[in-house]
Amino acid sequence: MMRTHLSTRLESRTAFVGLLLVGALGLAGLLAWQAFDAGRSHARAVQKTLQEQARFAAWEYAGNARDFLDGKVLYPGLEVMALAGGKDPGTPLTLERVGEIAAEKDWPYMDGVTGVFRVPLDGGPAAFEGNDAEATMAWLADGLRLRVLEDTRPGWEPVMVRMPSLGGVFVYRLEPQERSEAERIYGFRLTVEGMATPLQYAFTESPLLPEGLTGDHGNGRLFHVTVRDASGDSLWASPWSYTSDVSATDTLGTRYAGLVAEVVVNPEIAPTLVIGGLPRSRLPLLVVLLLLTTGLVAGAFFQLRRETELAQLRADFVSGVSHELRTPLAQIRMFSETLLLGRVRNEGERRRSLEIIVNESQRLTHQVDNVLLYSRAERDGVTVDAQEMDLGRLVREVAEAFRPLAQAEGSRLELVAPESLRLRADGTLLRQALLNLLDNALKYGPDGQTVRLGVQGDAREVRIFVEDEGAGVPAEERERIWEPYFRLRAHRESSVAGSGIGLSVVREVAEAHGGTARVAPSDPGRGARFELALPAPTLAGEGGGRDMVRGRTDEGVRARAPAALSRRMSSEALDSS
Image 1 (cartoon, one colour):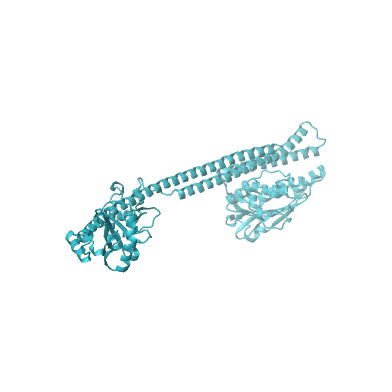
Image 2 (image 1 turned 90 degrees about the horizontal axis):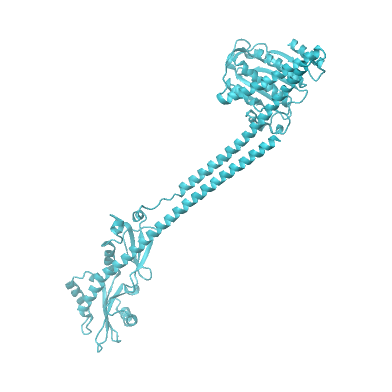
C-alpha cells in the first residue's frame, strides 16, 4: 500500500510539473506569435509608408511633367504655330515657315515636329503639311473636329492627343473667333522622341521627395519612372530599372493624352526613406528561440521522467534494503532470545542457533558494506588500496564464508580456484564484489542448483567467474543490469527482494582495478555466467600463464536436512576445506 501511495504521489507531481511545462511552452509560443505579429504589423506599417511615399513621388512627377510639357512644348510650340499662320486662314501654313519662326523664338523642339495643321470647325477644308497626309487629313476632318466640338474645356488651353497609327502626338488648340468668323483648330504633330526631353527634365530637374528624407540620393538612385499612354505603350523611361513590390502610378490628365506615370522604388534605398530603416525579419530568431524552448521543455520532460523513475527506484531500493536487513535481524533476534531465555534443549541446538546468528550477521554485514561502498562510489568514486595478495586464497575464503548461506537455501557451491595466484589488488573490494555475484546467483537461481565459483586466465586477463543454473539474462538487458536499481523485466513483479545495487558495485570494483564486469552469452534457460575480469599485467609471483587454471575443486553439500545433520555436514565441509 505504501508503494501504491508513493507511486500515486509521484504521478500526481509529475502530471502537475508536466502541466506547468506545457503551459510554459504554450506561453512561449504565444509570446513568439505576438512578437511575430508585431513584426508583421511593423512591416505592414513600413510598407504602407513606402507606398505612400511612392504615391507622392508619382504625383510629384506627374505635376512636374505637366509643367515641363506646358512650359517647354505645348505653349511655346502653339505660339510658334500661331505666328506662322495658324490663326489666319488666309496665310499658307508650311513646315518651312514654322521652322523659321521656331528658330526666331529659339524653340528647340522643331526637330520633333513631323506635321502642322489648321482645321475650321464650320466644316471648311482643313490644311495639313507633313507625311501621311491623306490619313492625317481624314482624321483631322472627322475625328479631331468631332473631338473638339464635344470638348467642354476652354478653347485657349493646349491639348495633346496620342495617335500611334498616325505617328506621334498631336498638339492643338481651339482659337475662338468673333461671331462673324468660324472657330478653327491649329497645332502640330510631335514624335514620341520629341517628348522625351521634357519628360526627362520632369525627372531630373527637381526631387520627387523632400531632400531631408532622401539625403544625398537623387531621383535616379531612388526611383525608376516609366511614362505610358492609355494603351500601355511606353513613351519614356528613366535609365535604371528596379524590381520592387513598392510602386505607384499617377495620370497626367486627359489634356495630356491620358499619359500615366509609374514610379518604382529602389528596394536597396528603400530603408533610407523610413525613419529608423526597414525592420529586419525576426522570424528566423523566433523560430530558433521557439525550437530551443521546445527542446528545453522536452529535456525537462525527459529529466522529470528520469527523476520520477529514480525516485521510484530509490523507493524500491529503500524497500528492498529494509527487507534485506529485516530478515537477518529477525533471525538474529529470534535465536538470541532463544539462547537468552534458555529454550535450547541440548548443545546441538545451541550450536545451531549460534551458527544461524553468525551467518545472518555475516549477511547483514555484507548488505551494510554493500550500501556503504555504493554510497562512497557515487560520492567520491571507488578508492583502491592495492596490495600484494593471493587471489586463490581470497576466492577460497569467500567460498567458505558463503557456503553456509548456500546450504541454507538448499544449493551447492562448487569451487574451481588455483593453488596460488598472486597479484596486486584490493582484497576487501574484490571480496565484496564476489559476495555480490554469489548472492545474486543464489537469489535468482532455482532451489537445489549448483553455483560454480572459479578463476580462469590467459596472457591478457584473469577472470573470476560465477555460474548459476537460473533462467539467464536476455541479450537486450545484459548491459542494463549493471545500472543501479535496474531489475530484469522477468523479475520486476517477483517476490525476490534486493537492494538493486549489487551488480553496480561489482562493475565499480572491476573498473576501479582497470578491468571489466560482464555477462557471458548463453542460451535462454541455461543459466548465467558473470565474469569479473582483471588485466593480466597486474599478475606477480608464481602461478601465472597456463598454471593459473590449475587448482582444486571443492564441492559443497546439499542442505535442506535436519538441523543436527545440517550442523554435522557444515562442520565436515569446513574441515575438508
